Amino acid sequence: MPQDYIPILIQTFVVLGFVITTMVLTHFIGPKRSSRAKLENFECGIEGMGNARSPFSVKYFLIAILFVLFDVEVIFMYPWAVNFKSLGKDGFLDMLLFMILVLAGFIYIILKGALKWDKR
Image (cartoon, rainbow, N blue to C red; front, side, top):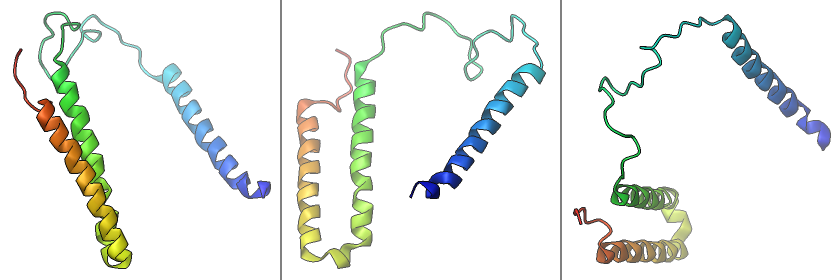
């Protein structure tokens, strides 16, 4: 029923009102002390040098994406392990198929050389 959503709408408006009010008030009330040193780029105490637009190895991004991909695949195994007994034989066969597909993908990226970090 539409009236069941009224508390959710009220809470949404309260939260949005709080966030907007806080952002506007801190903008007007907060200190405004700008200096050349404050506007400098700062990264972990290391002085910036060179151009930030220098080429970056695509291998880094490829390995990062593959890590996230296989990490998410492992997350799907946790609910299966928790419900292992109740899923029975069908659940085991489904997870076996899932693991075969994950392993096939892993073998494929190894054969393609995606995990080799060489400088060519």
